[in-house]
Length: 380
Image (cartoon, rainbow, N blue to C red):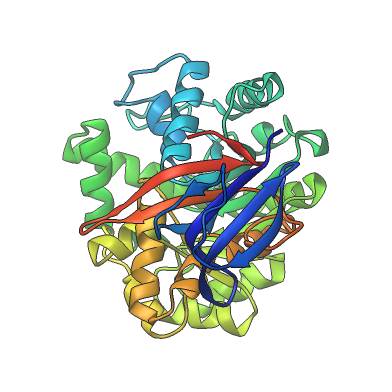
């Protein structure tokens, strides 16, 4: 592997921003120097930002490639490779691919089937073949309000190196869908349900949650421990829900829906993660708390691209502007997610760490990735 020098760059270090150069060799960052000089053979970054590669903990992007439209399914290998390339081009060098476990297999028109074990096997195979540009780790989204969660969890084990298990509970009338009108718009729009069919679906889901909710939550927590995975909560709304998450051993909270929940997370030492699309759009599409408001209250630690990969970089830069501290903004997509998931070898421009590095130009309306290196190898 050849040495790579990124010179005349604006380097975003853990706690400061400097003009200088960075040397990568043998898959790691070797040295960082100040100055604008460009040595022979170095890449002149012309003042562009040089950042640690972005770390994505929760993205629905792979599901969008596998099923680009409702009931339209694409071959998985090609979908995974396309997803991988899109993330590389947006500066993401480590991703925890979120795969749902727990299905609805009844006759309901809003039913959905199992896919996680199959897709996980294909990700692992492509990773082993060296077909993927960036680092792919596994995140199981455990849907509590489902019919098959326990059976699907049993198909995974410690050998799969599951990085994250998140507890998802989409029971109507709580958490993300406290406002049932928001759920109505989402479910009817996605599945083409009539109002009568939607109301029947609502009743079925509420009854299912009453029957299996507690058992499924306990099974998912136990599975995370069995896998050796980090546990995350999802859409906590009240302080009582956060207290349960803390009791379960939750490390970070995905998209708390209220200030109350975010503040309770902080009190329990749980990292707060919000969606970058929420930040960029100026609010939640589900009517929940705005990410920018939590940032103003210093209750935001991590950003996720959620359903728009390009939002991760642009959201972090927006936070840097909002806080008046670009290093702090970039930390929400690099150092903080690495800390939350125990990845001690990446997330900072520091000698000795992995050479997962990106070069970024700030344009008038957005940011453009001009180069991505993973383990010192250029992938974009």
